[in-house]
Image 1 (cartoon, rainbow, N blue to C red):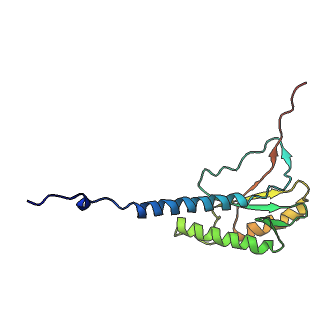
Image 2 (image 1 turned 30 degrees about the vertical axis):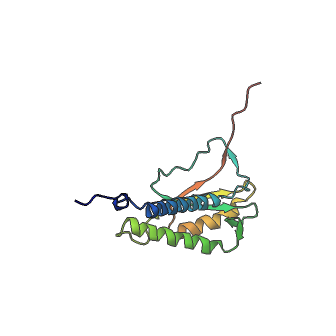
Image 3 (image 1 turned 60 degrees about the horizontal axis):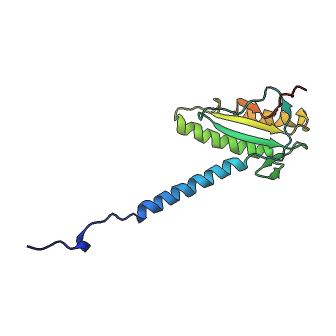
Length: 156
């Protein structure tokens, strides 16, 4: 009768599992950083007492437009003069997402994306209006304007 040797024992190979876990962690780190960089923290937002956070409850995508005091669109820290092209590209991306969610989606319907406009407190509305109109022409219907919430004044 042959005896079993220790080297005959089967042990699982953990290298593929560890490789997959590392790749998933790396992927999520990259995705999280990209979303955070779309917000331009250098903008001085207007202060409004009833400002609320953007909450789509995870049901919709969010597209952020940062507009500086000169009325220029700022994307990932770079000033973009071709804001019409940027909005059209975002609309095309939202349209592809709409088709993935609902294959019966018809062009011309409301895009499933909330357009968040972060305008500097010094930018005149006349500079924002053409961007909003271009976004509406592309199919965006849900808009939110970002502002800072006024802190309650302390009683003396």
